[in-house]
Image (tube, rainbow, N blue to C red):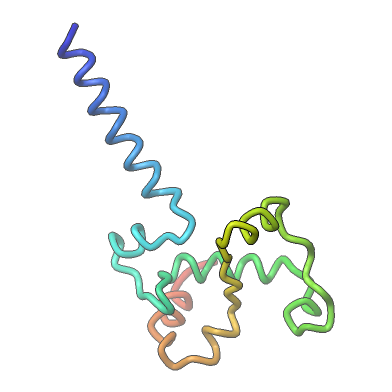
Length: 111
């Protein structure tokens, strides 16, 4: 019985580590493990998601002529305790020469 508990504890811990690594919002661990290119501390899979989200928005929001939609309800609470979210845009990728490796990886993707 004791071995079964120990095995379940080890299996649960490993499963937890794998899930946290996979669902980490910045994707830095996955990017590092999969050998992705990085720009501004974020891997190319993170920048891919930024671009996908921007393509779903109104182009006037990207140009700054239309205010962005309101963020999630917890945004005010996180700002109150000092946690600031990054507002990354694809313009950062286009403007910087340091992003060439990320742009090269993104150009090779089917989506």
